[in-house]
Each structure stands twice: as C-alpha cells, then as structure tokens.
Image 1 (cartoon, rainbow, N blue to C red):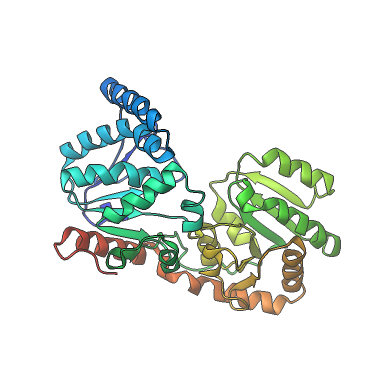
Image 2: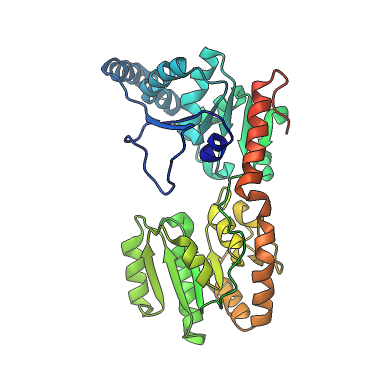
Length: 364
C-alpha cells in the first residue's frame, strides 16, 4: 500500500520501532517512500521508566500499557512534528495507541487501521485491548478490512467506519499448467492456526489417497510439536513443513487446493493470495476471515463449526474424488478476490486518506 501510494506521487513515511533499515517480505524501493526506525533518546527512556513506576501504584493493566509506551509516543511526536504530514495511519494495537494521543496533541487527522477480528483483538481484555478500544473512538476514521468486523465493536462510531481492503498481489492470469496432487497450508505455526488438527485430518486423507501430499509453509513455536505429530502418525513422506518461504507463489501455482483450519483470521491474506492463484479454500465457517471470502460450493468448502479433523478430511477427500467439481472451484476462485487487486485497494485507501484530510471527514 505504501509503495502504491508513493508511485502515485505521494510522499509516504513508514515509521516503526524495529531495526533500521526495515526488513521483511516486501522490497521497498521508491523515491517517494521513506522507511525509518524511531530512535528513543535517553530522556524518552527515562520518562517511560518514571511513568511505569507511577503507573505501578495504580496497578491496572491499561495504565501500565500506556506507561510502557510513553517513550514511543514522545519519539513519534518529535518526528511527526518534523515531517508535518497531512494525515497519519496507525496499524494494529500498539501502532494505534502510540499514534492516537500524539495525533490529538498535534491536531493531526489520523486513521486507526485494525487487521484482526475484534474477538481476537479485544478479548481477553488486556491493557492493550482496553487502550485500543478507547483510543480508536478519537480517530478520524476507523478501518477494518471486512465490514462485518464493525458489528463486534463494544462502542461504535458508524460515521467514521470505513472498509479498507488489504492490497493483495495477484497474477495477471492464472497459469494453465496441470496442478499437482498437492494440498497447501500457509501461516505461522501457532495454536490458533490449528495445524495440529490439519495434520490429524491428513492422516485420514493419506490412508485413502496415499499419492496426495500436504505442504505447510511457515514457521513458529509449534514447529517441534508438529514435527513430532507428523512422525507419530507416520506421515513423514506425506506431510512436509517447508518453513518460511519467499516463493509462496510457486507453491500456490502447483497446489490443487488450500487448506485453512485457523480459529481466528482477521482478513485472510493467505486465502486471498491463494484464491487469486486459482486455489479453492477449505476452511471453517466459525472464522470471520474465512467465511467472508469462501462461498461454499462456489470457490471452496465452508465447513460448519466446531471444526473437526474428520470434517476437514472428508471435505478434502470429496474434492479429490470429484476432479470436475474441483476444477470448477479452481476456475471460480480468482474472481472472488478481484476487488483486492493492488490498484483497486490503493484507489480505496487513497480516497479515504483524501477524505480524512478534508473537513467533511471520511465517508464509509
């Protein structure tokens, strides 16, 4: 999104508290795009320490959260005062809570951009969750990638709610090369993704369809446990943990379907990327990011919750056994995510940013 806005002539600063220069999956390389790590000065750290000490007397989680990030707010205020932007966007809880008070002090229009389902963002009610719920009410605009997320907010400002799609890199056309007997899963190896359930499901699939394979792309703290589960079930030749990959697109193009058992999913970037490459998705209707994109029998299978390994396995086996139906779902998948193509998504972001700067404010 930042690169796309810079390409349209906007000057864009990406400010963060990580190491400098910023590194990650995406390459930054545009004259209008500036990435910068915010450095906390000694006095910022001292102010933060004093604030945390005072907050500890009160003892509540929200006060401690605000105190913990005081130094970041001071550093951000200093840099924004130097840059003088027309509008600012805070991403996710810490980014939103760091920017919100600073923008208010500076009289700066700002957008709170949240990317996860509210039931994941705001429960349990940690200090960060409480602070985020409070500060977004001060934002010039509150953005989620899916309209249904607004219904789950405890307090709402409907006049400030905007749907801000995540830009998804999509191919100009889906390759017509034959698909392999391969199912794909992509995501961090953490409990909420339920890859343990998927591996249990694959034990059922492998028994009936031994020529099919499952590749899981991603890394995380569950790697060792999942590896042990694969060995225990005797799936070493059928299931492979591929680790983090930059060539995810190549896997999308080879696979026949995308399996996504996640319990929570804010938007479902992996789903959108996979669908854009012609992959139907099998996932759970209990997950907002899945049910927002998957149309049962049209571009995948939407399984009723609570999701079980048996239900996941049966859905996979059903499509394996019906190649014509699988081909139809593959053909339908790309149209589902056309609105998330980068230029369309950036059109929407650009419009909301302009409206946020204008006195009338953003329109939903």
